[in-house]
Amino acid sequence: MPPMETLQDWLAHCERLHPAAIEMGLERVGAVAGRMGLRFSCPVITVAGTNGKGSTCAMLEAIALQAGWRTGAYTSPHLVRFEERCRLGGEAAQAERLVPHFARVEAARQGTSLTYFEFTTLAILGLMAESDLDVAILEVGLGGRLDAVNVIDPDCAVITSIDLDHQAWLGDDRESIGREKAGILRAGRPAVVSDPVPPRSVIDRATELGADLWLLGRDFNFSGDKLQWGWAGRGRRYPGLAYPALRGANQLINASGVLAALAALRERLPVTAQAVRNGLAMVELPGRFQIVPGQPVLVLDVAHNPHSVAALAANLDAMGFYPTTHAVFGAMADKDLDPMLGKMLPLVDRWYFTDLPTPRAERAVQLHSRWQALNTRRDAAARTHDSPPAALAAAMAAADPADRILVFGSFFTVGGVLEAGLPRLQAQHLRT
View (cartoon, helix red, strand yellow):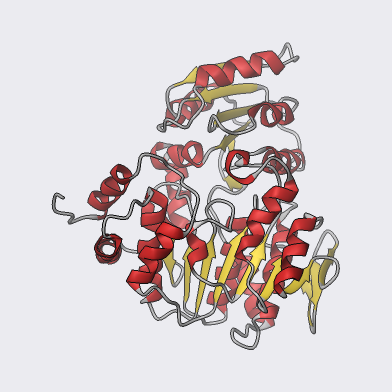
């Protein structure tokens, strides 16, 4: 093996190790974690779900930071830089701090085959476990039961909204997918479910395990008006809260799950009402209905399945009138693309389909063909481009100042324009 001196060296090594991007199962990754002696001495909150995981992790982190706790957060994928996947004390981990933990995984691997995700997950968990944290927040990558993150036993599990996605690995209906998500639950420990209508399989699994189940509408709830909202749960109330800084109607559901998780852990991780208020007011998460100021207005959203695209459409509707909406769109080929396009057809006037730098992606020409088959609007138009920056440049050139430009779909789509887009896009990403 050639010398591995930088993070990029190690990431290139991880990409060469396994022939598949995804291989479900914990036997291999669990064996390596065992040889690493991977353990956390602080409370661990693990978050699974189809949509809302990233927002939930960001709000948990923001509130815990405001309460004075030293936080570690693992989320994936990243938008621009790999280091975004690991945040310590609210800041992205430095590459040089990660490098020794990649070497540690390699030493413990002993020839075991690991995917890119499994190897990098173990390295990040290794760094977090040795960082003197007060709380670790872990986002599941895919599913739950067989995801590499699940080698760590959570002290509290959170399951966000569940819908159809990754059916090839998780199943073709919400019950099957819910069963996989419920794999992160542990006996006797809090299990917070923020999906308003959870699959029966989640409730059954929690009951079977004897988990401490917190259900939205039974164990905690929220209400609000145009100015403020309130939350109430077991033995705790937060009235008169300002709306979370993360935009979108679905964020109150995510925030409610966050407050339930913190209430469930209040003896080990107490937070004040002021920390809750400040954390929700200050939370930031790039690429989740992120509105970049300027003319024309820019909206960035990593909505990449029918459920999240439906939420995006509702949020766009609530923004008010724009003469023309331009959309840069690129997505993975294994997604349910027709419903995603269909949901956005009434809202988007000009489409800019883009290729993405991964073999998993649908080609722009294929996206264009799908759009042509679905489109019934004579006033709509579409073009294809070889990269997200090229597509954004074309949209910017065509848009009037009063128009709206939407960039959505894969993390590669949003990340591509953040990495190489307009200066104001890059400045916004640096701030968040």
